Length: 342
Image (tube, rainbow, N blue to C red; front, side):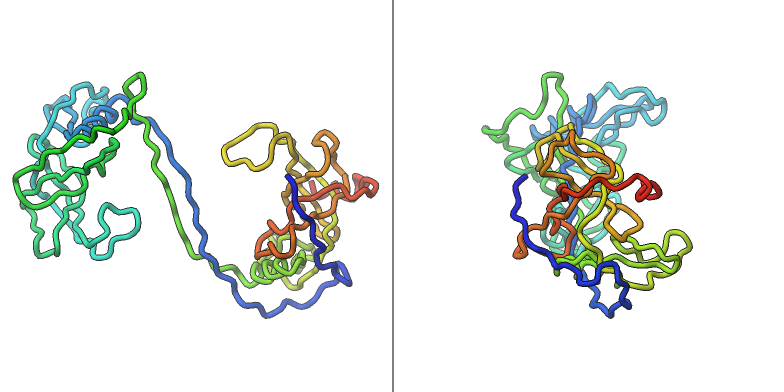
């Protein structure tokens, strides 16, 4: 990993406590996302393949009922479902609710109805959407039929929506659609999962984050005397509030560490590299960061390190401003100086 170091703010009086400032509370939208990949197995795979072909399959249970979508195990006996039967593309609305304001990721971008639909030939209801202009066009007992997407991928939203009426639309197969089953006939699908939340930092977090944007490492002293970095709202020992702000130097000691040898998806540094707990000078708890600019096998407990900062133009309200820590060249710290912080 190659970075350009920048000179951070150096505290004129390191480890001197100052009163807590009045700080504007920081807010930021946080987006979390990942792709969830799974095999549909021996029952839902044929169901997915049928959707791709414009057909709907149900699973026959031991008591003669047909459930859509099919369940992998019979709800009455617990035995695996082995018989799949085709049901109709039309059905009856059993119950429904109106969605006046669609959200991102839902089947339709206009207001629509969620409905439980009992398809012809089925004994259970399928949850899907009904495309109508308003709730006055919905009613329990109304007949609806499926409309299909022109290009289908073996997902339940291959059915674009249900619409009023009893004349099902024929699904037109896409000539350029690719096979979605593996050699064993199982379908593997990837579903993007995403969550976006607006996070409001605490006052303590806010001045800590503002400090990072200014090139400062600000810790918090609690009533029992310990200095925490990052600072805490309250002491984990007795629950007392943080009482003072302490500006720390960007040097410290490695307490414990691990060498990362296993590659993983999204990894930005080629293994092997070191993740270590660094106890900043004047702090009473270490925090996790990267140790670079030295062979992994040379990293050791007690090694003295110094922060390597990214260019000041890249600084934001995160600890990423410190690219990593590197050996400072100082003699190793004696074990007694960090033994209580392991």
